[in-house]
Image (cartoon, rainbow, N blue to C red; front, top):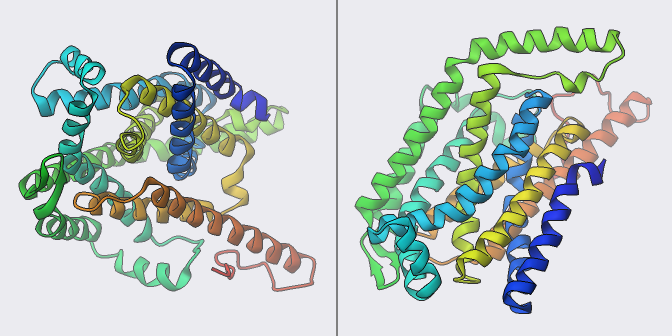
Length: 382
């Protein structure tokens, strides 16, 4: 199972590292390896959230996610995106931007640094909305109930997440953005941050609106999925091959791609702290992206999110932390090590809490512990 799911990732890793060593030497080998690890550590929460969406799709769309989706993730966000932001910032064509990255890496890095406030505002607001919509929803299963219960009650107020996001954006524009870190020192980027943050919010609302538009169809597809699962079980087939298809799956696929793009902002920006070489960067981050995709599929096929119910909570808390960090980095530099560790700690805590919950439920079923009739919330110990 592991080899089948991660086989392509292992192959791309071996080929990528071998190519880096052959083409540029052992220094490139080391840099590409470090960038791969960086991308995996920063994007593990991405895999958990993606798995929660991908499990609703059928096998066909899961394959699309691993093929066309990985091309978008690797070439779109890890190669084209850094070139695009430089081209827009410097007002040059994409070919000139690539030549600039190859011939004048220091100038290229300076242009990316200047574009960072806009990128951080856009990505930060998109990720913040994901976190807010999750935390304000009243869920049967709660991880940190003392936080989630009162927030779920507040979530009944219409458009509360949008209002809070806008307040956060205004606060960011009036604080961090007035002393934004650029290649030429600290500058006032309030207008840029406001515009980019609103663009990130609009992007999220458009994607969410499209998903809501097909909500009824998704529900119909889920009913059909349930019927087909029962039919598949009766016929002795694998029920996991059944899932959302058609327009519903297509818009979920689009949502996954936008979500992956937002998650990749910190990895792309953080890579410039390690190297200015655009091809080393694309290779290292691309290898890391392959593992994130494979890990997503592995979580779905193993049913990990069903067995460890707090994992999705931990991932969304990590998203909220990443959103805040992105906004803070408009003015202050924060080590990618800190960013990655925060996400890993939150997900590890949710994983351990899930294990403890499962043990308590099992003990209850055996008559040796608390009753397992109420499975909505079990003390997490966190």
